[in-house]
Image 1 (cartoon, rainbow, N blue to C red):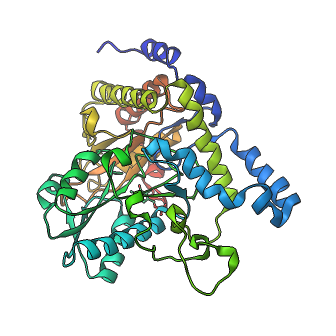
Image 2 (cartoon, protein in one colour):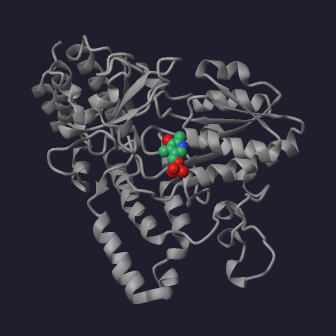
Length: 436
Ligand SMILES: *Cc1c(COP(=O)(O)O)cnc(C)c1O
């Protein structure tokens, strides 16, 4: 083991993305490794929100829909962000939540599949997909006479058969950080006539994504994680241009109407991605999101996604290497793939069942709580209780916009101290809270 704190500091000094850290307000003394769950606060956001409230709303009142361009914000932000997911102009809107957007695109996908490939009855997804995706899929299946089939990752290839209507996958798994090969799976699915829906919640702004290059059909994703849009910030939706105008999406609200201010009694969908809007958008929240997106735009001058990805892999490699070298003997394992091509921007550690204070749970939750008390913020995701293949997870997101190499070193030193000293056994770290 040759790595030292000095080496980490030297890597920070050489990091071309280092200036971006100043575009965030992080509390002093905190090492924030949870930007994969709620991104950090951009330095520009508070003033921007104040300006929207005080000037745009306060002074211009309803005129601001025109004067401040509120009406076109979903499309403008969509166009600004589109290149980061390999989409073209006019193909992306920010609106609603990921769950709601997934309902829209899965319903559209079901209609496309039933028109083009009638008789297909299956919607396949991953058993360890984020639960809201599966809940929404259950609803769409019930409405369209489809059967939801849940698979382990290694079963997906063989399950791409001509009886499948839709394949719904999350590109980077929220529990393990494992990343699918979007282009390869989409190509194999299309060869079987299957419509592909991708969830980019843990990919957008975190890893390179090329939706048009992969020839995907539909995509949704979140903006309060890696995009730093703020709690509950509007999600995005993308539809391949060949499919956008084929069907309405089911939430046919007036913002998706071709001429909302004609107030006609009949719904007529707008052409293009605008039809994926539903009702009036949360303008304050959407304006805050712009500050997050602006940091990505600014990063283009420093190397853009190629530089972000290179740093993200260097950070996660370093974390894995240091944990394995310095935190041994405590039942900690690695859930995230070592191969770069299969890794998102997070590292998930496992902890064996039965090592917790009561001899029953894994103690992973308490370890995360003890780390948070030391200012190292990650999170915990529950496993299946030792009955199946999913262990409890200690999850650490590495956002290259504001996490540095010294942060990684210090985070691992805290983890080592928490484990070696048994600090996590203290009762206050073993009280389970509402949000983990
Ligand atoms: C975070 C996340 C969501 C969140 O959905 P919301 O509707 O914003 O609550 C959905 N799917 C995946 C895969 C996620 O990671």
